[in-house]
Image 1 (tube, one colour):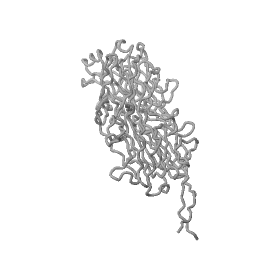
Image 2 (cartoon, helix red, strand yellow):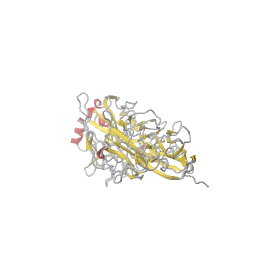
Image 3 (cartoon, one colour):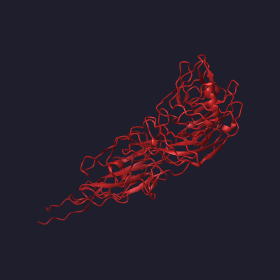
Image 4 (cartoon, helix red, strand yellow):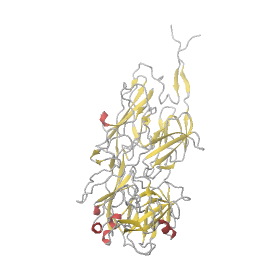
Length: 624
């Protein structure tokens, strides 16, 4: 029987695109040409090509026949020298292009100093001088406190087997002339690496400037900027810049210890977006980047009202009234009118509380002392309040500085030692004074509430007057005049929901890209995507999320996670075995106290097809 040569095997699924085992390339031949059509994208590789992104893009290119894997580099120079590399899965210490293996992620970037400021220590405080406008120099601007440690991000970069990559870094806004960031890719074949592709260049840049939204007396509000992780608000009259996790800022500087209405009738303000760098950057890109300052906006405030303290609105992306509560994505600003406590006396300082019960007994959030008829959380901390007659006189004629960010504690007498703001746990009462609480954590600015199942579950809030009292030991302390419990019992209580929107992982079809049988990387056009080999998934950013968690399961219900990964990006490559899978994504908000987890997205079903083989052509019998 005549013998036959080994037939040529064609993999209709994997070999056509990815990473044939090498049969498509005869050993000893030259590697094929470098990858082509390298491009960046946010949700689908088919979207119009762009060279400007507000958040870290993913990247795709045409597959290379016979590729075992790919090596990808992102840097700040077209030379891709070691000192300019931002992200790379190129192995070091081995012969270039030798095989395929996972690569250890880079070590965390050290604190940096440069044109944008100086980052120091664990608080992430920095100083920077914004541009001047109209001859008025902006004051030194503190960077918002660094978020608490995010969930562990993978310590290794898996083998890149498909012609697409997700960069596990939240790149800062960074622009050049014409471009500041560069990428290139090469394929690793059985015969070594191909050449590097033509470099793809791009900029990271904000998409616009925040503009004012309708507000109430005592606070300002603005539109959110895609890609921003927080905001800075500059009050030029006060020569002060504050940091906000949300899109609302109160005007406490204008009201506190100021009895003349000329202080608060008109308040000028400017706002800019801040983008915090997250992830491991080996070459020292700035840890924080900024958008431009907005034009000067003016907030007009009416005269203060007197009479019974009355709750008004809770405002963030939505508005809640005492009569009709709504669910908010962010911790809302809280506003009120009037100035009378339960004792019928008038006061000029106030504090807000939020609890998990309508009786306002189980306090979970304690606001800072403010003289404004509104409160909004800040990550730069409360005002540094005066405690002596001389300090009060100075405060009445000038502007108050910021106090410490750390949480408040209780002294032996039950009164608060500091005047912080943020999450608390109940600390009981002392005498006839109000419960003030102790902090959950003081390491980070925890100024956001975790999600609840609104409308059945919600937060209840109230406001109480505060006064500076002289204690029996002659010391002076700021104390609450009313108990939150008594204020709520009197009817001074309203509610709101806190529920982040699920991460959006699909529009008409899921944001899933994968290889087709003919080797092309395409975005799925099906509601139940089918891909060959490893799928790349993307999603739209969630408000307030600093990172994301991805889980996958074989069944939608009951959900049993077969794997999980965390990322600072808005995309991920899932290395899944053939078969049917479901995946889901949720944001992680490090400003929430106790738990950072946000709402899961709707699970998406996808199928990873098994490789199929067929005989392409039989070999002819050799002649002897």
